[in-house]
Structures are given as structure tokens and as C-alpha cells.
Amino acid sequence: MFHHLSFFISLVAQFFAVTAGTPVARNLKHKAILMTTFAAGLRVGEIANLKVSDIDSKNMQILIRQGKGKKDRYSLLSPANLSILRQYWMQYRPSLWLFPGKPADKPISIRTVQQVFVDAKVRSGIQKDVSTCIYLHLRRMDVLNVKSPLDLLEGDDNE
Image (cartoon, rainbow, N blue to C red):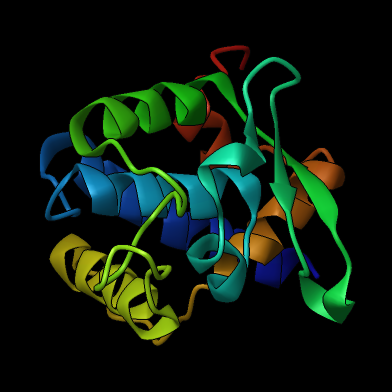
């Protein structure tokens, strides 16, 4: 198990080491997608189907509707993630879907979210063949109280 955890930590550390100096997201929308996926540990379909009303800044949580098993659940909304989402909202002003697609009355496609991840992975120089499922594994590390680069992403300076 430790091998898997150290692999995930090193992979995301590589991603964020590059993102600190070089933007791996093409625009603020892509940055918000990546940040929310990482920080909340969401699946591709869950990030694609988020609505603006699913972001609960008062209780610092995100409502995930009809996730795995067709069940609703909540995920944590970190202060850093909320800050990026607020910047994103100010620039793009989404109304129904948090990440609208084309046309705007439809959510962003799962394929587009996957491509945002692939583009960011390529721009960061990561060679390993990984998918967005890595975010779920990283979120589970938090449950195990294992320090991860997610702590850096979420602004945890208590090391």
C-alpha cells in the first residue's frame, strides 16, 4: 500500500511543482475544473454535472448529485478551491451548470473534462499513464491522514 501512496504523492507533487511556475491549465475555467476535481476528489461525471447551486460556500461543501451508485453525497469545499471558483464565477458568470458546455444550457462533456486533464498532464511533463481516478485515491489519502500535495493545493501550511 505504501508504494501506491508514494507513487500518487510523487506524481501530484510533480504536477504541482510545474503548476507553481508554469500554468498547466489553458484558462481559468480549466484551472477551476482541475482544482475542484483534485480538492474535492470528484469523478469525471461528477465534475461535469455540477450546478452552480451545488456549491455551498456557507457550509464549505459541494453537493454531488447522482454520483456513484446514483446516490447524492457531499464533498468538502476547501478555502483555496472556493477562492478559485469565485474568480471563475466572476469571469464566466455561469448560470445553471457550473461548467457549461456547448450549447451553454448543457453541462460540459465528460470527454472535454478528460481532455482538460490530459492537456494539463502533458503540459506538466508527467509521463505516467494516469487518469482522473488519481484524484479519488488522493482524497482517500487524506482520510488516512497521509500528508499529500493536496495539502499544498488547499493551503495547509502546518507541516
